[in-house]
Length: 81
Image 1 (spheres, helix red, strand yellow):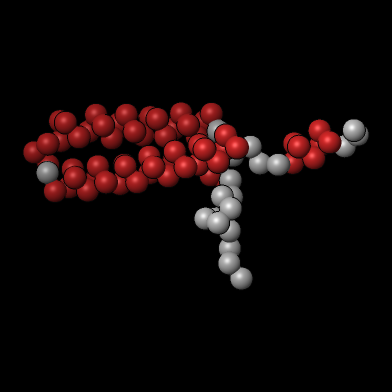
Image 2 (tube, helix red, strand yellow):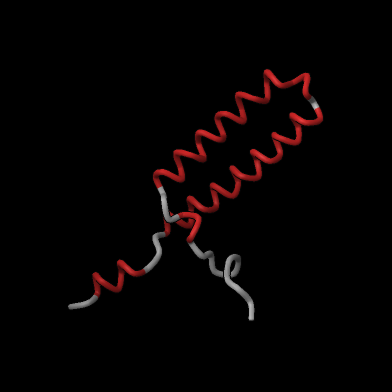
């Protein structure tokens, strides 16, 4: 069928949606660990490696899935009229 490959290419990739959900989790985890660091500065040696790991994971995910943040999740990211 002519035209089908072009139509399929226009659909967003499911992997971008999965990466977006993972990134949202990473963003929230980084924020939460930042709050813990604020309230427990004596635990900096334990918390900083976790923050560094999460940030590196986020950076690598964004590099591997450059369109993930733009993915529109039906029912979550759609604008309501």
